[in-house]
Image (cartoon, rainbow, N blue to C red):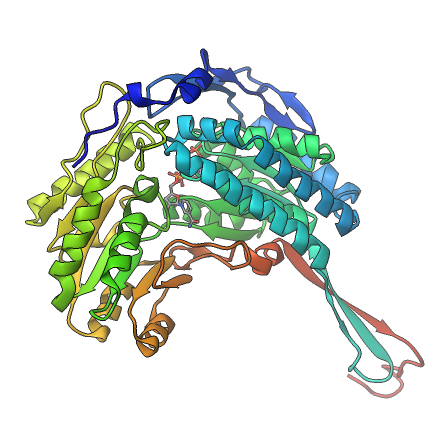
Length: 511
Ligand code: NDP
């Protein structure tokens, strides 16, 4: 196992860019940068180096009310909802360009606040910009439907209209990427929004707000509040003037969103947790699979809803595959998020680190063999863990079922495809899964029976903007990305046009 890369190895370029004091941020309400009404603030300490990197306005319910009022006013005025798609698309495209132009600055803040490694943060900037570009295209091709087969006197238009004001709440693991899976889709549909990023990673969402204004977005269309989930977030779920909740985060808070939505029957779209299976058949290309397995399990320090945390491998190739996986995992560099060579950065906060270490310790007590991973990485500053590979995991153990949200891979085996399917589908989650086989028939039949919203065959974690993403079971409701991602933010309205003489209802005895 490699020791963490020493902070001295941070490139001089990155070190020069480190903030000398915390950035101070305001919230975006009705096109203006404002402090919270209470004047209260909160700070964010970087999990990579313990430095305080940001100070934020702490929104309360009254701040959220102002933001919702601004979004409501902007929606009801109709200037955004009825703006020609061509013009809306121009703003989305311009935003994509601005994300690319500011990618280094945003990626640095993303790495400082989330602890993710800088190389990955940089890649996520391009991925995010691409989503804004995609939405510009969909905005221009979104349309309703027309029916002219309803008889001689009736034609109908089915209009696809924006749903209205959307509360968008996001987590800390992919801050810019996840807001980019929601906001441009809502905007493409013609909605207005109130956005709340996670208290741990607010910076890049606020910078996105700057870029949107620069791109020409009218005031009030996007409002960004910063603060805590149980106050500001809860108000965004409860508010009567909000038409839809779009939430990504834990399954527990997702359930709170569903409960809160009942008050005014808001539409709810949820992207929640996962405990994703990587199923490897004996005929698979084990070399390719081994690489994808460690990427799936350890990328973003396993703090990913798509984390491929369960390796379910055919018994006859278990030892050969696990040997390859362990050999590669040993090379993975855990280290300072700002070091370009690091592959696993810091863990988001102490509670998350304790949770990860607790699961590995619990598995040891249950008699599981720890092939790799000694728990917390000793370091002068920051929160780091070694990636862990657990062998001999029983399918009923907590590590086989609970979402750990850390770099922990549990290895289980199967003898038959039925057994593999039963283990893969036993999870209460159903976000994603991978199948490794060189047999086309196995790939198709197995994929059809897996209960997950995304299935990767002989790959892992690709996600083109065109393809819908979302979960089965307790991994969520609704879909993001693709055309479905924009349609989530719309309502259908049926308009029937009658012409010619109308048959009299009463006189003809029609009922
Ligand atoms: P949380 O559910 O704790 O938080 C997500 C967001 O919800 C944060 O902005 C948080 O605010 C807010 N929040 C917390 N409590 C409330 C509340 N009562 N009312 C309204 N909002 C609230 O998740 P994490 O941020 O810890 O993210 C990790 C989880 O997200 C994992 O379970 C993971 O699987 C899931 N996830 C799912 C993805 C998917 O696409 N399926 C993608 C990424 C993550 P604050 O933090 O400021 O308190």
